[in-house]
Amino acid sequence: MRGVFEALGEPVRRHILELLAAGEQPVGPLVTALQSRMPISQPAVSQHLKVLLEASLVSVRAAGTRRLYALDHAGLDAAQAWLAGLSDPLGAFAQPLDALATEVARGRKTRRAAAEPQAARPSDDQDSQTA
Image (cartoon, rainbow, N blue to C red; front, side, top):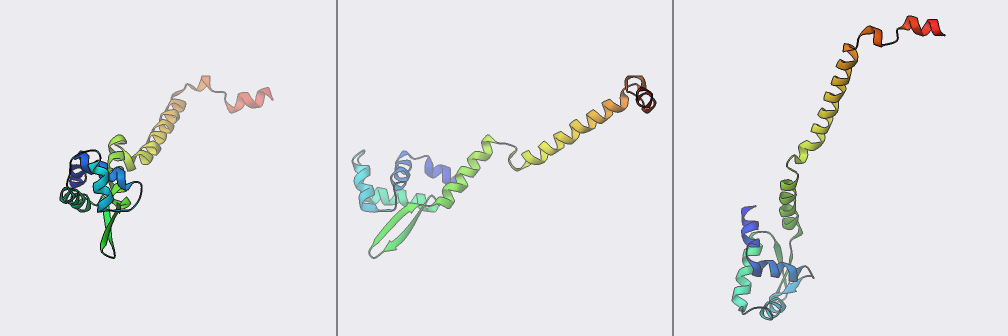
């Protein structure tokens, strides 16, 4: 996961991902879009794409002589799942812990009921006498 967040630490790479969110693109339009916001060369964009590829955040496929780049949803999903785990520290343990809390509460209720004095509870004899 470390490589993913190192790749995302660079603003140019985050902008590339934003551009690719619109769909698959070759390097040329990416360079043009980036150059409209900052001075950057085509080789620099290619280097950023290489880092994103190595981090599994983008994929590439050949189409004739062009290479088309796209978001790699598997890599993005893995990063998102890792981040989600930070906001839910129990993660997969949450449901079993909920069940444990229910059992603990049930045990407490049973112990309280057993600890009540006999006089506080109606006996079977009282129920039959009032009927």
